[in-house]
Length: 360
Image 1 (cartoon, rainbow, N blue to C red):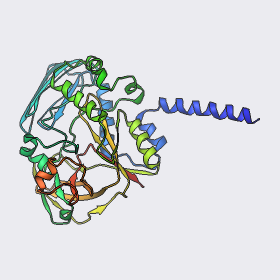
Image 2 (spheres, one colour):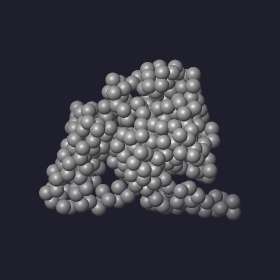
Image 3 (tube, rainbow, N blue to C red):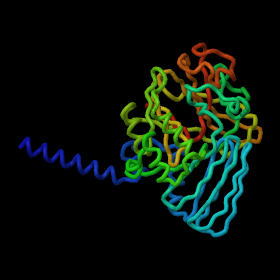
Image 4 (cartoon, rainbow, N blue to C red):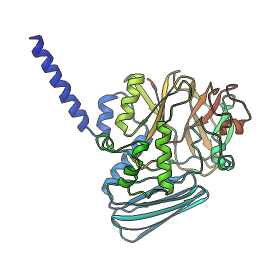
């Protein structure tokens, strides 16, 4: 009888695993996190994924230097032009054969690809400001949007004004279903196969950015950091659940509308939202949605209500790092704030497509 019971349990395990594998990302979320509300940023990415599969021609390139968008939906002969901070993007495309070119401060990004190969890589002028291993570049020091990211925890109070630039996304890469993502290589020694699969020319800006993302994912974290790069929403859910359990909350910055660089004032209602243990997932520049996730122990998170001079309201997520002793001494934050590693908490706001997970 015991043997039969074990066989039945084993069969049920296989059935459940198979059913989970067949679930859409949305249903997988509901099955694993039934009490967790999905952040707007994730909903938006899932909608973009749905729109992409319906479109006959969609090309999007977004970076900190410029923006170009073509949401073709099968309309022939459309021309789209977008202008960003220091960059211009132009798209001319025929159904199913979209071509987009974006020029920004950091170089040029080009996407040509049929349906099924969602290349979404933008222009990146320097190291990710949220990667604490790297020294700041001259470009970052000149970029008001990056400089404005960092502040001291003592300034996190009503009435404080900050010059900020909220954008909807840092890049428009969409999620791949986990079963599809698992079939694609994601390692430096397979970079030639990866570039070939997405029709990305070796040596191009896109190729270098994809290589940089893989390299950052493969490198060890800073002292005390547990990190992992997720290549699907399902793998992000699994990584977070294993570290924190299933009774979770997930939040991201929300802004009523995209803004230019403008003055925002912190309103009443600043509150700490996360316990000492949390997981933060930062979206990376890649052909599909890849998130650099890491478990944090020395970071305090706050929900910060803000209002811009034009009336735009935001609920911004602020991360305040209490131990920066392992950061690069030449990191952008230290150069902006004129402080040294390990001396005072260093804070920054998170873009809309970065997710904070914590115990409910």
